[in-house]
Length: 316
Image 1: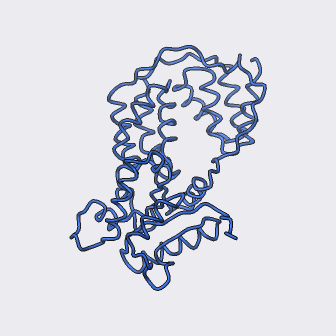
Image 2: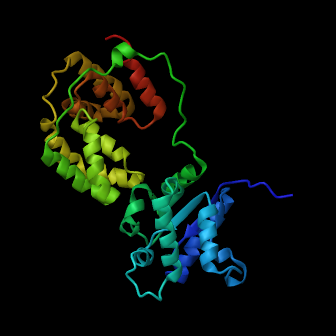
Image 3: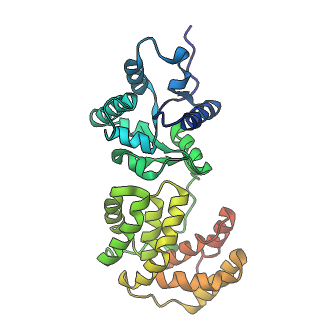
């Protein structure tokens, strides 16, 4: 009787850069198998070569695996782009041709292909058609993200809908905000390090939905899959972008009692910095909902965030 498959399957595609690099790839394959992924890598093949030959072995594994994990390194990138002599790295070149052809002919293939970066690799080594979905395994969070994508696990549990406070937090009907083109250009420049050439399209699309500069920055940060890259993006643009906030919309005149109450509630969770934070967010927010939710985002603990939001869920 055929044994039932227990977990998702994955093939690791990589280049034999060095013995150290191959050891890292093997360690990754071993770890994935320990975590329930039926992972395959050429180093597992008995005798050093499959009976059917490497081309047929690679093609069958790529077509049959649930996921293909591309270990992107400098050597891998050069071979994919055919920047090395034709007699060097034939295995990677063959795999790359298969990957690009499947990307063209199979609409589901890109979802099944996950570029990964391990020690020694960089974002620029990820082939452009796949750069919008890589996992950076140099940080443990990147490995967790990889498992989430393979097993289809959401990043956070989705709670049931509550009764809501539609009247209190209903978004106002407002015209689309037109952001300063110079501001969008600066954001695009800051985003390109994390997303590559698609940064321009992401900024254009996101700017059509955002209502404030702060909202725009957070939405763009949310497009960055790696938490470390997202934090670096926020740090890079914070001072410059908040100074440009005047281009998005005129300042709102807030009820002093609301701001004082917000400072008092926020201080219970972040301490004396609450006054500075409330003053900063108040300069950027355009609605009461925007103000309260942006302040809640400054609170680290989820339970504390819920308590803060609950304090403003009723009528003032």
